[in-house]
Length: 324
Image 1 (cartoon, rainbow, N blue to C red):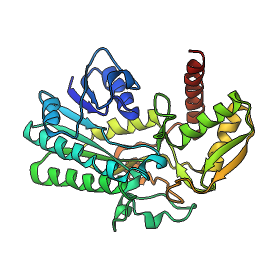
Image 2 (image 1 turned 90 degrees about the vertical axis):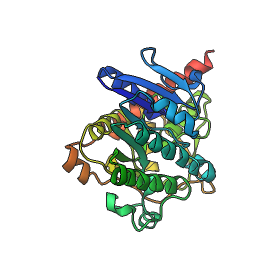
Image 3 (image 1 turned 180 degrees about the vertical axis):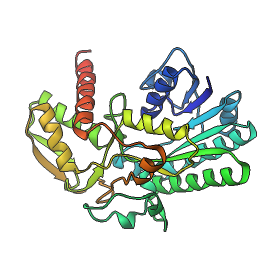
Image 4 (image 1 turned 180 degrees about the horizontal axis):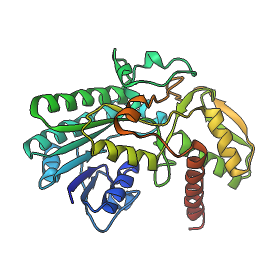
């Protein structure tokens, strides 16, 4: 039984990780900047704090008495958010900086940092038919502006705390994690949740046209949250430090993903391509060679299966709001 601090526990991935840690019998302390009423998941059998983790003193307070730290706290969202909030995303560097300082001074045994595929060199992501990105492809450095630079810089800081102070850091580069109990509206949602929500709203409002950001030809791979949690804790319990990809190799275009959502919803919609909206790089996919070799892990849940679970959850949430 280990005492583990989860920062960003009120968020999407943080909430799912907390649930699994409790299931495994750990003592969990949770903290998030959002009011407790806005957390996606809350659990009575752990400590829950509303606190800003960019503030150094708060990091030291939360780390005190813990064995391990899983740091999921950062300002992030889909392309619509990160392309329009570069400075805000960069300020998340304060969370990782202060958490590392607190972990070093409090002799924390293990520290996990959640990085992103946005750390990869954008020069390699100009074509939609891109091959999977390998961990070495982050350098020479040219990450996504703002959010990607913060992640890459924080990765380096983790590495140097390992080298200089012996802090057992683990760094994962997440590739588009999606699933239930996450953001699906409000501006921070990612493509799978956004397209599920838009499709549901089209059906509810008897509208035959859906807005799609970009031309729909941009490609990505998307990883379902259950696979993400399993891989994250495998890495956390391993001797490997990373960075390492946690993603799926099932690459699809946005159009192909929408085809799947239409099949799930039993509807066919016209597509209004909004070419002035943020769309990110033209192509991005995960290469899982390293994680298969090091951790013996690969994704299990297909995109269709994961989208079906996500669609049904969002559909239920929207209907609950309409019935209030």
